Length: 316
Image 1: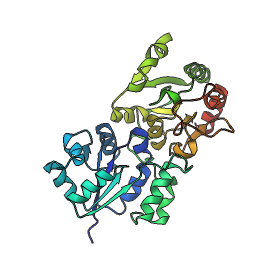
Image 2: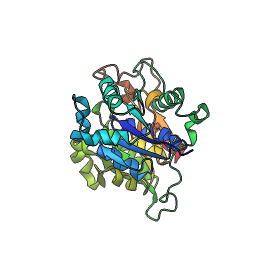
Image 3: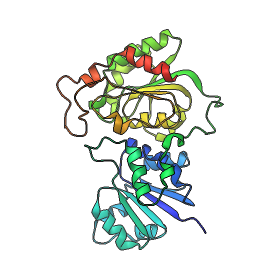
Image 4: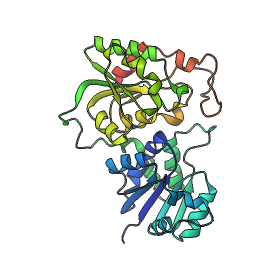
């Protein structure tokens, strides 16, 4: 019997999408072809990593027409061409529109667990896929579903094991560890003969002048395919909870992720060489339940450079 084809529609951001990459890897066992409809940068990334064969941009007017009384003919033809569709979305209107267009199976799944449920996002997605019969229970062991086998791994001639990428930013400023702590960490790494270099994305322009001081090397990247190439040239990674951190861990790079108000039980990046740093506190992570951090965010302030460097050497 010929395997069906699958379209995955995901409206989430960088880290949300990377968190389901292990599930996509496992879905390839049951589908002849998997394509994606998502943000353009995430589509390019997914195709670069071989997770989807083809991708379609979420930003188009054709997709937006699904929220009107009459969908664009292009999006109708696209949706009808797939045997099954998974919508990672909270929109019942989107689900209704897709079901109106195609009689093929369409499942709408929550893109992440409810904020009060302390379950990891990847495990949550796996459980839902098992419950709907798209995966088997045995598939839910996600420990082996990482991109360790890639043509630019340990034999990559441009790889420098002494180069340690530091990502001092995050999509939300609430998740940022103090930049002064990253500079202390930089000195500690240099004292060990390593070569720390800073990575900043579009959301961290406000840090640019501060990081540029003293001639620090900075990579300014907004293209996620270029980010993959850069990560594969490094020997390690240290950063805040962010999409870039999820990608670094997923690619198998030894990574230390500094958590603050977000819950690592829900959002720790998937990867074989990952250490998570967050102090033991009585208060629960509040990033998804409160609009602002507290006046004295001990979840960030109580993490020291020494704690981070010790975690780094456990995976490096």
